[in-house]
Length: 348
Image (tube, rainbow, N blue to C red; front, side, top):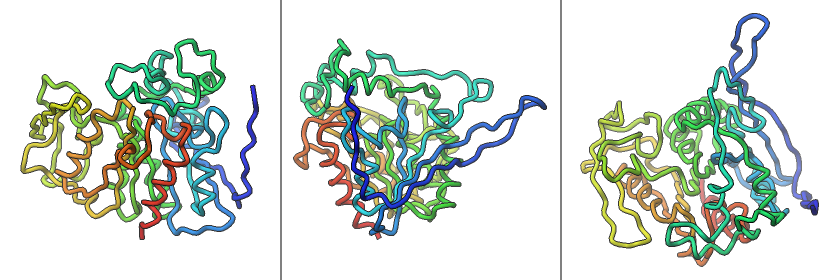
C-alpha cells in the first residue's frame, strides 16, 4: 500500500469540535447521544466571505472530502487552497459521531454488490457504460488497491432517511448559528439537509450545491400516485399553502419517451411554493454516468414548480464526461470542483 502525502501549504489553521447532543440514560448509564463531529479548515488567506459546509452521503464519512481512494487531493483541501474556510460534518450516529443502538436503533451498510453502482461501468441503467472516471478497476474481483481503499472506508448508517434528517437539521442549525451564514454542499442522501436547513434558517444559508440529491421526488413507485414523502425531503417544509402530510400533495406523472430519462411523479398544478428557498443561489449537479442521471431532472422539475430558481447542471453538457455518483473521488474531481467554484464565487 502506497501512503500518499497531500501538500497542505495553503492551510492556515484547523479545528475539530462537536455540536453537542443531549444527556440521557438512567443513573450509572448516562451518556450523550446525537452529537455531530465537525472538522474545520481555514486558509492562510481567506478570500471569500462565506464558509462552505460539506455534508456526506449514505455509508460515507468526512473522508469523502479529505482525500481520494487513490491518494489525490480531496475537495476540502482544494476549496481551502482557493481561499474558502471549510467545515466538514459527520452525520450523527455515523463515523466519529457516536452511535447508541438503544437510542438510535439498528443500522445498515452498503453491500459490496451495491458499491458497484458507485465504482463500475457495468450497471443496469443505460448511462453506466460511459463511466470512465473511477480511479480504480471497479471490478467484482475487488483486488485493486484503490477499490479496496474505498470499500474499507464504508461505514454503517441509519436506514431511515427521516431519522438522519431530523438529527442533522438540529445540529446543522446550531452549527450555522455558531459560524454564521454559509454555503452548503450536499451529496446524495445528504441532499435533503441542504433544503431543510435553507428552509429552517434561510438567513444563514447563502447558497446550496446539491450533488445528485436524494430522489426521485415523492416516490419511485410509478404504480402509486400517493406521495411517500415531502418531495425533496422526508420532513415537512414551509410549503405555501401548508402541506401537513405527504397525502396532501396532488401529483401527476411526468412521462418520458427518452430511454435515458425516467418518467416520475411531479406536482400537479397549481403547485405549492417553497417560499423560503426562493431567490437563493441553488445548483443541482448530476454526472453523465451515475444512476442518478435518469431521474435528477425530476427533482429539478419539482424545484421549478415550487418557485425555486436554480441551475440544473449536467456535467456532460459542460464537457465533463464519464463520471459516476462519487464524482468528488474520481479522476477529474478537481475539474468538477472548478465548475462549482465558478458558480459559488459569484454568491454575494
